[in-house]
Amino acid sequence: MEILELEFFQRALIGGVFIGITAPLIGLFLVLRRLSMIGDTLSHVAIAGVALGLLIGFYPLAAGVIFAIAASFAIEKLRKAYKTYAELSLAIIMSGGIALASILFTWGKSFSMNVNSYLFGSIYTLSTGDLYLIGGVTIAVLVIIGFQLKELFLMTFDEEAAAVSGLPTRFYNVMISVLTALVISAAIKIVGALLVSALLTIPAACSLIVARSFRQSVIIVVVIGELAVIAGLLIAGVWNLAPGGTIVLLLIAVLLILLTLRKGFRRAG
Image (cartoon, rainbow, N blue to C red; front, side, top):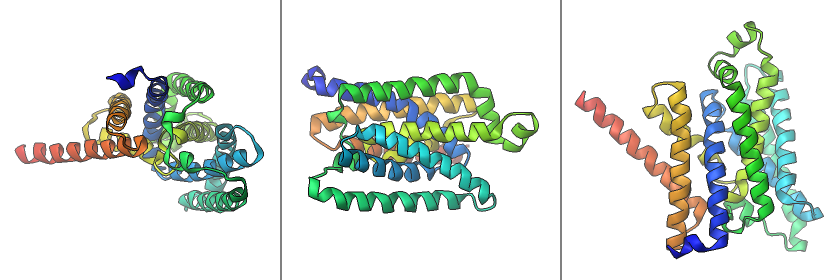
C-alpha cells in the first residue's frame, strides 16, 4: 500500500507499536488489581498538564507526564488515607484534573489553544521528539516489568502476602502508579485522553477470557494490543477514519468475538 511509504504514517506505526506494548501490559496489572478507572483519572490530569504546557510554551507531552506523575503520588496518598474506600482517591483526583483542565482551556481560548489532538488523539502528527518520549517510556516499562515480574505478580494477587514476605509494598504501589502515568501521558497523542482507558483495559478483559495463567495473560494482552493498533491504523489510513476511534472499536469487536466464542464453547461442553 502506498500509505506505508509516507513518512508521517511510518512514524504513526512506530508510535503505535510502542504504545501497543506498554498500555495493555500496564493495563493488565491495573485490571487485576481492580484499578481500571485509574486510566481515566490520570488521563484527565495529564490533559490539564498538556493545556498548561500549551499556555506557557512548554513541551505539552512532558507537561502531561509531570502532572500525571504528581497525580499518581496523590492517588497513593489518598488511597492510604481512605483504605476502606480506596476508589475515592480516583474520584477526587479526576474531579480536580477536570476542574483544572476546564480553567486552563478557558484561559487558552484567547491564545487559540488547540487541545483536540490530545483529547481525541492525533497519531499522524507524531514528531521525532514524541517518538523518543514514547520509545523511552516503552523501554522503561519493559525493563522494570521484566526485572520485577515475580514481585509484581505477588503484589497484584496478594498484597498482604507480599508485605508479610518483606516486599516494600508502598514502593511497588508507587512504581505501578508512576509507570501508569508515564504510559497514559505517552498514549494521549496516539488515541487521545478520552480513549486511552480502552487501550489499558480492553486487551486485559480479552486476556481474562482466554488465558489460563498469568504468563499467558501477559503475552495475550500485548498480542491483542498490537494487532488492534496496527490493524486500526491501516484501516483508518485507507478509509480516512479517526485512528484512535478505529483502534478502540476493533478492540471492542475482538472482545465481543471472544465472549461469543466462550459462550459457544460452554454450550458445546
